Length: 97
Image 1 (cartoon, helix red, strand yellow):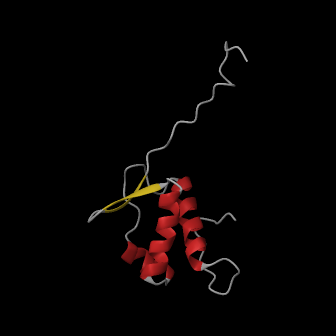
Image 2 (spheres, helix red, strand yellow):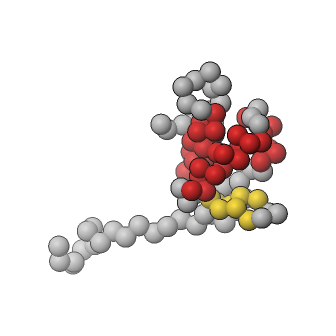
């Protein structure tokens, strides 16, 4: 399920709050709100912004860490992972297929 970067958490909805937050964070990264190798909002800021428990925020961050979108640095925070180059060998001119 796709989420908008400016969405709010629907506590009564069918998707768990941590999955909603993971989707929102994913969308904020895709929009370019946070650049590679730069920190996202802190856990405390996300708790306050979305009205969630710290454990819920940590679960959401764990989801996007597992996806490779962000990485955590102990005592520093969570940072946007560098973009991975996708090989495009089929579209390159002059290559035999």
